Length: 203
Image (cartoon, rainbow, N blue to C red; front, top):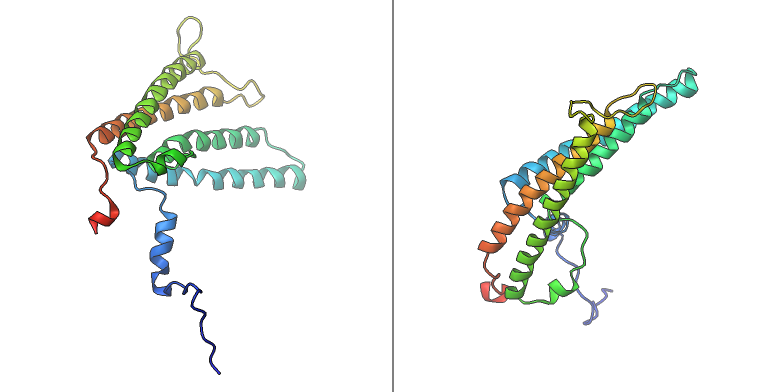
């Protein structure tokens, strides 16, 4: 005997629509320009450094506990790699518009107000990135030059003594300069943009 589906029960979505639904959910936001697309691809490549950091950590475990011969370079290298990943995550997140934010007011605004809010947000982002780039430049200069102004990279001061501190500060400057360029392009695009048309009207 067949069972009838209750009238108030919502029918399950067609399984043929599942790939389209998953694609919509997975896509945070499309990149807005060629620079964003380039940075997003670079970010995916940089993410493999996590695997590299894990691999050399495994080597350290075997060397330390298996052969009683710990290394002097693994810990600092892992910290450096994770720092690079963390720093470059800023431009990558900005490229995909996936920074964490509260959108209660934005979602409740109309198309015209949203357009002006985008412009205001991009302007503030540009000012912030410019300010941070200026500070990062001075930080990197101090880490890469001695008091006489000669090129001299800041080092960790350990037995291995790599120049990772100066290199990390250089990566911070690089990431902030990238974000400043992104913010300039985003502001220009939001200034040129027109309020989005109503979805129902577009149909």
